[in-house]
Image (cartoon, rainbow, N blue to C red; front, side, top):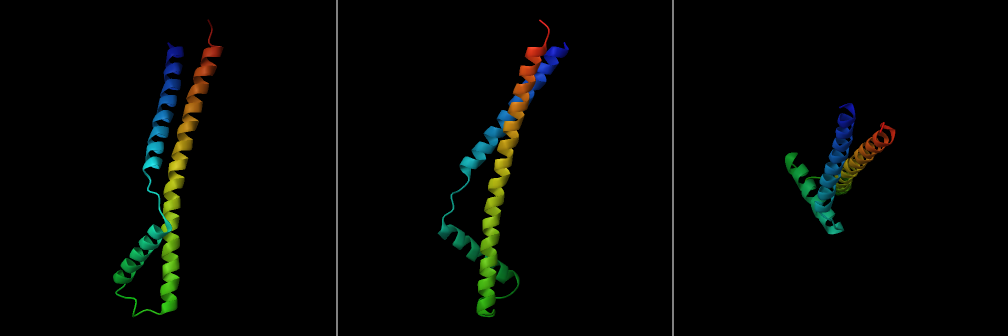
Amino acid sequence: MQGSLSQRFGFLLAAAGLGLCGYAGLQWYQLPRYSEDDLKASAELNLQLDLAREGLNETKIDPEELQQRRRQVTVEVAQEITKQRRQLWSWLLAGMALIVAGSLRLLVRSTLSPR
């Protein structure tokens, strides 16, 4: 009975890994492809929202400070996109690790089990 439980656990690990890889792959496929214009538009929109939240507009702020804020917001937008991609990559790697662990468990169990 213990052998079958060990086999089930190996299959469960591999199935969970396959599911995680499939989910991460689907999410990766559905990620939008951002162009430079998209990034600039998003950064500009976020900048306008930040200024409105602070009760400022572009005429009330120093042009150099406005440029500095614009660069900062652009960096934040790019970092958020990178963060999303890294998270999906880590899910994909975790899924692959589960597949390998489950497969190794099945392989070791089948080669070491008495016949």
